[in-house]
Amino acid sequence: MEGLTEQEYTTLLERLEEEFSEYYELAGGKNYRYHHLVRTHRYVKKLVEKPEIRDLEFNLKVLEVAALFHDIGRTEDIEDGYLDPIEAHEGHAETGREIVEQFIDDILSEEQVEEVKQVIGNHHSRPEKVETRIVRDADRLGLFGPLNLWRMIHYASDKERPLEDSIEYFWGEGREQKKERFDELNYECSKKIARKRMEKAEETMKTIEEEHLGKDI
Ligand SMILES: [Fe+2]
Ligand SMILES: [Fe+2]
Image (tube, rainbow, N blue to C red; front, side, top):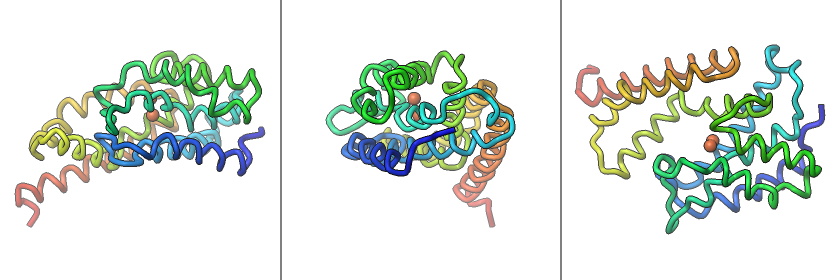
């Protein structure tokens, strides 16, 4: 199945970089969102190789473009050079559906643009379509691993919270939330990756906690 050409991919990346490089994201920092989108696209390409997914019916080009642009609506939530992704979560899927066309209409057919709009609009709500289910899993994979610790601690720092609060959040509310997100993953292969990442993150958090309390030596 035909995916994006090297040239199309590079062009789309340039557009994304332009949209996402001029502001500071709380819970991530500068360029965080751009890298999240590049990663989500990479994960999608990995997931479609898995036996569980590769024989399903989907349009690879639609899938790739939707992965790259799924959070484009967040550009509308930037205020005075800052974005708080937790406060400003609501509505970015719908906004994305409304604004994505201008970035992709020279690369996709009209029908494919409509499909991308549908995937983006539903990426936090209605995962009925195969493409949405795959993008949603790839997007969610970012929540489980040690990299998400960086986001959590970074956000805590912006809000001037002490490390103890992050540790408490990680083992309490954060863990519960991750379990819920885990159960919502659509494919077993995604669950396998998420499980491994959760173990790694818990190990890392234990190490941080022990060292913080001076109990590591
Ligand atoms: Fe999103
Ligand atoms: Fe996302």
